[in-house]
Length: 171
Image (cartoon, rainbow, N blue to C red; front, side):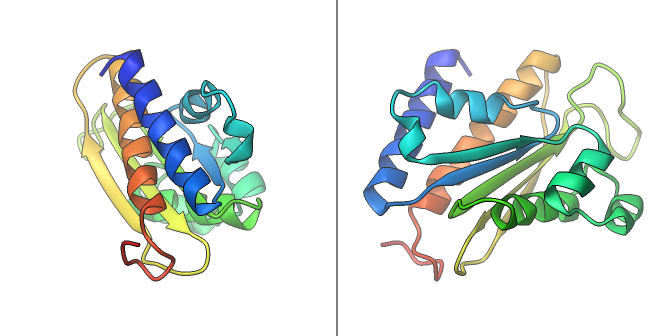
């Protein structure tokens, strides 16, 4: 993925959100704010970007996004349940309509046999209904490549979520 691809995805997200009068929030760990950065690189994004949370530590996930300590202990920070809790926390602590969460192991260290480097978990939630979405990817590449691919996946998921009505159906 290239920077122009990321900008194209962010611009498409903005068009969809504006057309529907929706706003987005991000909850990021391994991407360290890159999703929010991609979104805010688009002129006029203040009309559809509500806020971003960079919650790299477990304490930050708990304090800012209300992720339960017990969930972190039981599942680990890199898990779909934690990603879902992060996204739900972003909605609960913002005025956004849609939220994305990204948590993973970008490398080069930190991996385990069960969760190797490149394991990234995502969640997308929408206020007012609709089924939340979660996804785990095992991404190849170095730290920068894992993070950039994660941004693209997060944006693709937001575009899909923005194209649905709150009941989960396409408009």
